[in-house]
Image (cartoon, rainbow, N blue to C red; front, top):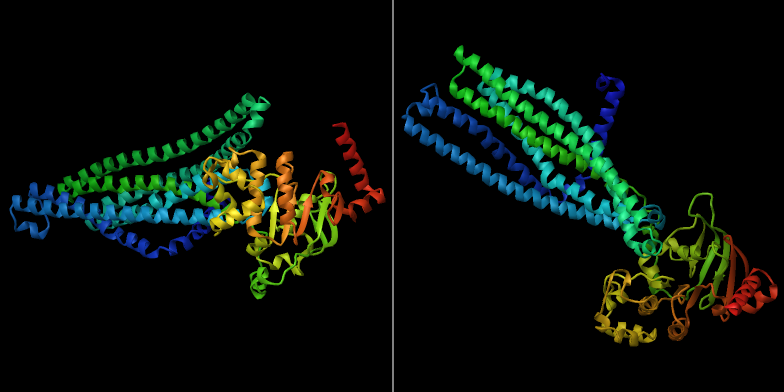
Amino acid sequence: MAVFSPIGQQKNLNRLNNNRILVLRLVPYLRRHIYLLSLAMGLLIPLATAGAIQPLIIGQAVSLLRQESAWRFLRTLSIEQGIIWLSILLSITVIIRVCCASFQGYLVQKIGQIITADIRKDLFTHVTSLEMSFFNRTPVGRLVTRLTSDVEALGDVFSSGAIGVLSDGVYIFVIIITMITVQVKLALMLVLMMIPVTGLIIYFQSQYRKANYKVREELSKLNSILQENIAGIDVVQLFRRELFNSELFRSANERYRKAVDKTIFYDSAVSATSEWISLVAIAGVLWLGGVFIVDEVITFGTLSAFILYAQRLFNPLRQLVDKLTIFQAGFTAIERISELMNEPIEIIELEDKIHSLSSFHQRSTSGEICFENVWFGYNKDEYVLKNLDFTIHAGEKIAFVGPTGAGKSSIIRLLCRLYDPIQGRILIDGVDLREISKTELRQYIGVILQESFLFAGDVMRNIVLGEDYCFEQVQKAANITNIEQFINELPQGYKTQVRERGANLSGGQKQLLAFARVAIRNPRILVLDEATSSLDVKTEALIQDALDHLLNQRTAVIIAHRLSTIRDVNRIFVLKKGELLESGNHQELLKKGGLYNDLYKLQMMKDKNS
């Protein structure tokens, strides 16, 4: 009763509307390959027609052997000749079906793989364009699941489901029309038997889709736990978390298994229903057909044809059920992919303003940075930076200091436009950051972080990062940063393979490569976020010499916890809880006796005790 209630009808309507919206998301991808798709669709007609004719041919053979009423052209032939002609016709239909099915299968698989690759590419491009806050709240394993198994499930819709559903649908329609032209009553009986089984299938399919969505969610959680434990394996082993984490993984794995069990139940229920109704349909044809034969309404040939039709009508229905299962999994995948694609790109380049400017990088730029009343927070109404208003002059070397949580790293993220201010604006050489293309901004600002990430590949690839630099330029950057000797000592020099995350290099060596990355790009502004913290004394001396060269005639923004390393900068900005408390050079701040003086004395005492 609930199905026919207003609430049930509304739920069904909402589900249909949701499915329609999800399908429309795929239309742009289908339009790109409309010719291949049209060719695959065009093969449905000969494929279905040949399949519908075959039972008639076999029925005519039975009628011919029993000397019953047969097709007109068979009446003038002997039984042997008629059987030969019918065999030729049957062979032709078989050849047509085999050729059309094979070629259509190839086209469908090809379209499916192309569209899957297109969706995966677009999804990857979208994900890598999202704001950093998205990655802070989203587990890596969940993203990996969306980009791999969800996209593959969607690919199965194209390669196995979409055309297959249409093919089976057309086949069923052609068989029904053919049956009606042969014997209306038997045809109506079979059609009426399809109605209840279709209702059951729709119900089980809707339950399967809900269960499948749960499976995808549990798989995402499982992948997240796996990725987290592999990435943090050193912490897991150092703190003896193996058994505890294994129990967490076991629990997640058990939840995933139970979710899969539900999909298996509903899938099996659908298969069993279609199998049962197929047998009942054949029994029904035998019963009603037997009655018609006794009453001389139909011939044995017609009954034979309808037995085959009953089988062929419910076989594609059973196949249709299997493909609808794939379709439901695909709808789940589309839902999850759409959720990800609907994530807004908050850092947006204003194309009209960017293109109206002359190329920023080719202008007469000096490297001035200006924060105008900047407010920023990672969460609404929780500001980590409050009303920052200062100017860093071209060529000036400044440092940000302050206790943990003062907002130093947040300033760097805003300057590199990983985030946009909630209020106020940031100017570089008088141009708002939002009016500078990201490509030019990355060329203009060089950043060396406390921990440098290395990609799997050789040393040279980790310096150029996919850009078009010749080997001489790479060598020059290595010379400037005093790391060529270190590279030459590697087994294969610049061609030495770096493992994932630079596992075969020390922290200092990874940091040296980060300096070379920046040097080769020759930025006007250099940002150093505790860039020398991973270096030993000897390496730091080499880097300091490189820094003196890199910082020459460049604006430098430095974040440092060791205050002794920033004595020679032009100005020091002292932050606390997101506010600028003091500014001045080292000596001026010591004389003020404020927060900087307290931090400096505390660090000096710590150094003496150590």
